[in-house]
Length: 118
Image 1: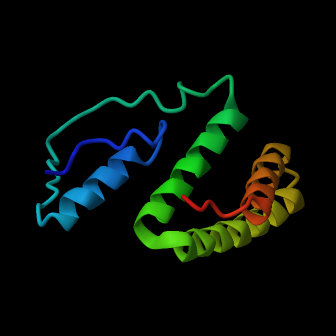
Image 2: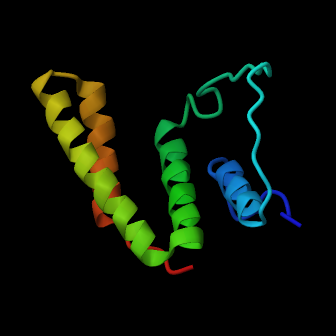
Image 3: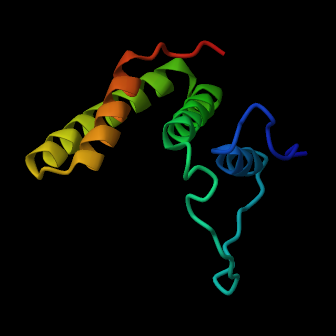
């Protein structure tokens, strides 16, 4: 029915894609507040931050392309480029070099990368 995770996704957005497909089939997604899990945040990419960042944004591009088309990807790119530019300016004003680096990278990636076709 829902098919499970789409193998085109690597590391990010596969669960979001799966949940949307489940909802489109008319099923409901339930939240169980008593459930507990431990997430070792960031441990998969501690030594390769830029590579992991690229995987994240590529997966988000794929998700938006799959469900909202090229216009959806373009809208996402515009929104994140503007947000990154504003945060880059703030990081620079606050003399936050790590923030400057991250937001500069996001801005450049989102404003210069070609919109994927498939």
